[in-house]
Image (tube, rainbow, N blue to C red; front, side, top):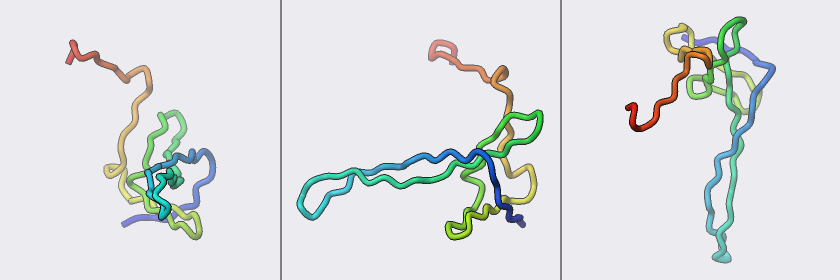
Length: 88
């Protein structure tokens, strides 16, 4: 089950680009925009949920799956640890 919502706020746009061969033989880069969707809750870190939602391209409505267990959990930056190869 899922619910549909119309989100406003911060939706950064990223581009996916691929080389494309034209009929003339020259190679051009063709880029496609896509929005990245973030769940932002008060007093919690923002979590990207782009891959978990369905977006209606005509209306902009976003369908979010029901159940918090399906969505990724976030953590504050202070709890994110980077490891070097020697530590792994």
